[in-house]
Image (cartoon, rainbow, N blue to C red; front, side, top):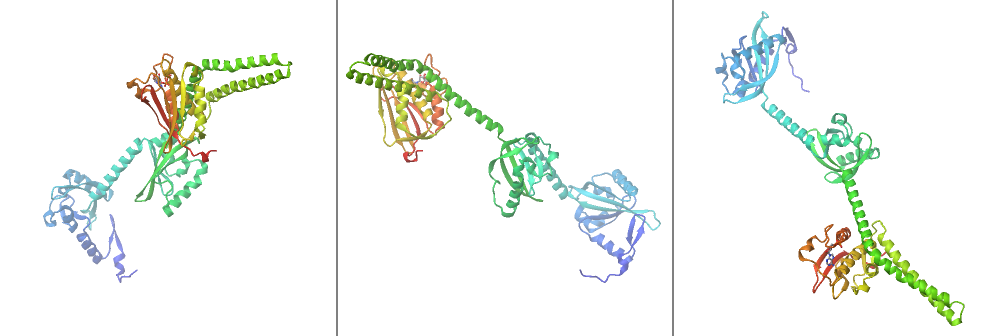
Length: 517
Ligand code: ADP
């Protein structure tokens, strides 16, 4: 540091009743010069009654008035306060040796500005009050900044109080700076309990160490893992219980370093609701299956009756034939073989029905389409052939495999086929055609009948639950079918038949047979 050859006297101060002052006259003179020319504040001297005796260059800058014109005026004229208030301020200054306060001062142009005023009483050589020193600083900018800060703080407070998602602001060391009202509700902590603590207190213990490492790495490398994107993580309440949340983090640079704002949305309700919807859907599908089965039960009883009666007849014949001539033995064996085949057939009917009714998990896999359709139509057409329904299949060789849950797709087919059969109850021609067609990535399956057809106005509502025209109909079949098809990523729709009747189509994702498991 440069050293100046200053006389030691310059550093000594003499005691005065109001503190100390430079002892050396030259220093005092230098100080007076400094006070005269200092430009960042108004420096004034008044007599004990507040009449201005002296004002410096800064006074002119601050008030826009020429210093000479101010000499002899009451200093109260520079402020919005009146002469009485100015006197009270001076009396306070005498009592306290100095007084500092904020008030509004008047610029010559008419505008008032915020000012910081210090009044110091100055004693004469006899120790009695000789003058007052005024130091006045324009604090308009500081006040405006304070107001802006207060406003933005109030704004921030109102955001924190009302933002529907929980909001947590942390600094770059992971310490919580603010905690919204929704965050208080979500985590059961009060803001005062968490501000200043590490945000990892809101995480399960096994995430904590990692979180500090995340922030450190991000601040060092800028490598974004979560900033700017939402992700699902586990959070922890005050009572230690854990719950799923969606977290999105934003980043900002504040005057005091980086801050991160986390928006936290509680997913437990959403996940619970989604789970419930899935359960209800499964339930509905199952109910639909049971009701479809209910209507089939009587025809099935009849259908099962046939093989069982045949079995009984074959066995009776075999019993009669046994023990007679060798030729009869061969016929008896034949009858027993036939009885066995019928028993297998009866068992097969029951097996198909069981697998159709069972509440399976949704199991999608690569399924060969032709046997799937043939199985379903055999089940759905049980008893229909006797009532004159002719069934035709037209399968596209390029539509050989679908990626689907076999039982659910069979349920769709059974619904469509049984609806078609019912629609053809009174029809002269009762032809049912099932076709498949490969359409890009999808396969379209159509069930076409020559029945009563669809009342025009009805098509848009067909797939809604409880839309039925049947006396004993539930109106659930098509709505369940739509749920199933859409869950597979497909589409289901109806059309009026080309000549008569109606056409129901649905699509399923095609699968390559070589990817079959
Ligand atoms: P449900 O069969 O219990 O009435 P669905 O949802 O399966 O319930 O069918 C709803 C309605 O759609 C039926 O009541 C019927 O009016 C109409 N519908 C369905 N399929 C056909 C069809 N192939 N031909 C004419 N109308 C049909």
